[in-house]
Length: 271
Image 1 (spheres, rainbow, N blue to C red):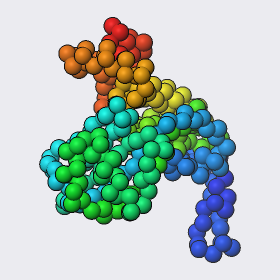
Image 2: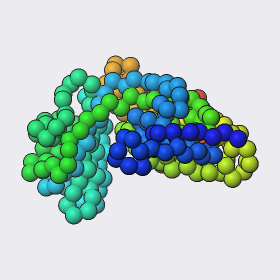
Image 3: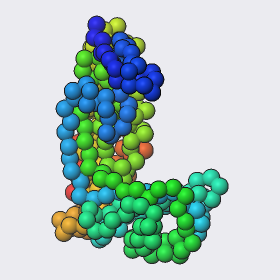
């Protein structure tokens, strides 16, 4: 049976001289995209760079309906905006934009954030006119990364520690919760937890690759400003307007839906 020794990495007191060792039948790392557990466990990480950034901030004073979430792409600019109303007059505001176009980090960049958002949706100029931030404005690289087999030697990785997908399509929390369920079921159905861990890892990789593939299709169709993507939109969008089921529903219904060539061809208007 595999055991993983946490050694002095678990600190029980502020003093560096006090540490303990804990042995466990299974260790689960769910500590985000910069996972320390992933590093300690010796997992190999694969990367897929994406040429854009994502910025987010919490606002008050937004002039917009509080019962509507807005999520709008502007493919010509390669940008996307989202506004999400919350309780007590607060809003979460997001902007996805090509890398290197602007710098959106820090409180002094809020006016730039609002102006760039209004380029995508002109109505946001008025909506953000009196907006103030109630939290940090932060931007981060959205490049995808994943561990091909997120289990080894008694350590299982969940959520962003195992795989990060494009946050434009909001699959991080859903993937983490699904991963917990898949790991739970594998452990309940197999007394050999090494085999259960391997079963979990295979299923996690399969489902993530489905999400990764479909998000890539959607990014090309709705956000990529290049000439090839524009040509795809000219063919695909009129057909999607006639039949919305051409757009894969994986973002709402999960990665168990088919993501084969027939699904891709329907999305891009080739079938």
